[in-house]
Image 1 (cartoon, helix red, strand yellow):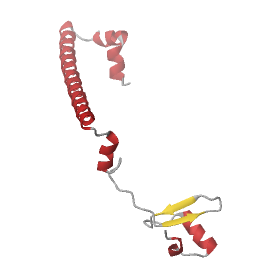
Image 2 (image 1 turned 30 degrees about the vertical axis):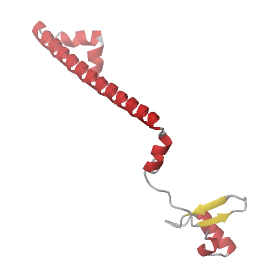
Image 3 (image 1 turned 90 degrees about the horizontal axis):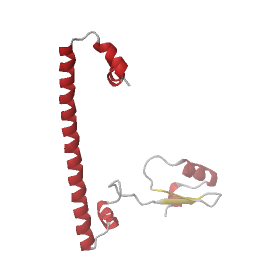
Length: 130
């Protein structure tokens, strides 16, 4: 919290700072604060109205989807998932000593588990192709 806010929100601090001001100056500050309050209230009311309108539109769309028999999962499937990126199919598969299966698309750097597997078993990448 800044010093200004502390002074403005604490009555005794505000009183101390207002001792040097005339009544006219204090009334001017009060009038300015009143205008700021009204502007803030109007902005918050506008934001709330926009939020309510958005919620109403979302509810309308949800009802239309329900009436058409369309589920949210179907809509996401058309989009291609959450990120919009398609998943690259794995081209290579290995099973480590613990029986855990690891898959790799072949893109990017070779994963450490694959490097270790290739070195330990003396096989190449093409030997692990799916």
